[in-house]
Length: 277
Image (cartoon, rainbow, N blue to C red; front, side, top):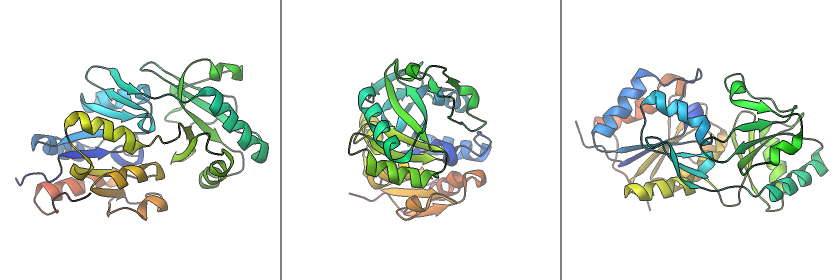
């Protein structure tokens, strides 16, 4: 077996590592195991907060470092503890929401609480997809949304689609927060300057590697900073057009073992060595 050319493999979770049914295929598991056996590290980099990521990591037998919450949390899966955590100022978040609602009308709101036991709370209007509905709690009093430290806020609009809501919110928040689109029905307010790349760089530093050592896989606009940081960015088939526009390579979809397709070629010596700034 040829030496693996990238010391670090960074994979997004939903729409990338996970199939549509929320599982990881045997082929992809085997490819990742072969990569780590060849000396590379694998880091999951996800928009999900640590509590929403923990069960997936456990199922994978993953005990290393994961980057969660759009980069706000560096989580040690084996030790089940946060190594770093960045919170979103709740007063600033409420000002940003007020600015958006003043122009667009009422939003549906959900919040992700900080910490390893933090929960996701939603107002009555917010709708989660069926796979995640049991992971959140709906509150009767919206004041409860703001009762504990948060790492991000989720927004939905009754008429605007995700892309339109993201564009409009960015124009309206006036630099109070950043706005990211992380997946279907998932538009988020996060602290200014927070990206997956920021969290990944902190995690990589602990492993003694850098962006030039990294191949990254993703499917959504929130993966764009990670692709810019990594030496090689691989988008899944069907990825968001904004990510496809900056990807170095496009692989098969998450349901067609797109990660494994690329890793197997690299393991066989069919890909190039890592290059980058």
